Length: 229
Image (cartoon, rainbow, N blue to C red; front, side):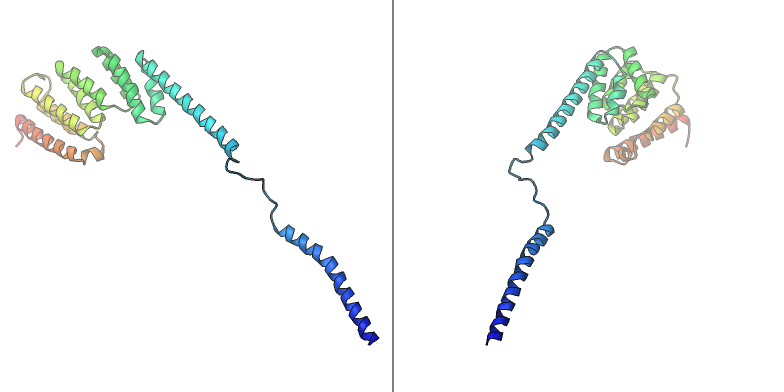
């Protein structure tokens, strides 16, 4: 009986010692498995990080607007070089606004031709408005050179309807003898050659289809004048 009692006391003591050393280690192991707690986060905890980004964006936006306002102002004074700067921004709508400002200031034919020369020399986009300004000037006094220029700009503007009306005007001038130095052969070559300056998308559009019919009729009329059966 005494032996049994001693054995029981020994076993209980051994278990107590084991639990004493094992429990703290288990807690430490559990803490090591969990990642360290992050900083407290509330509803507005990221406000301080977002605000600088917003301030930078507003600064960039203001700088961009100031740059564009300056370009428009320079265009108003007739500075054609702003076109290359406007084109570099990659915003076609804004480029056209700058070009429109220059067109508005080009009241005289010489100034308008200088603008056209700058645009084409630097391979800049030709807007329909620039082409129309040149075509309106051409209609007042058509000749061989201005006819070629009008057709070329209408094609560069990539406007099928504008190109069609320019072809019709040129053909009408030729019929009335207003282009005495332009032969039927030369006019046909101009019509067909400048047609291919239009983009494939414009040539294949519905307006492009109407243009093709106009060109086909003009070609037949000019070929008849040339004596081609």
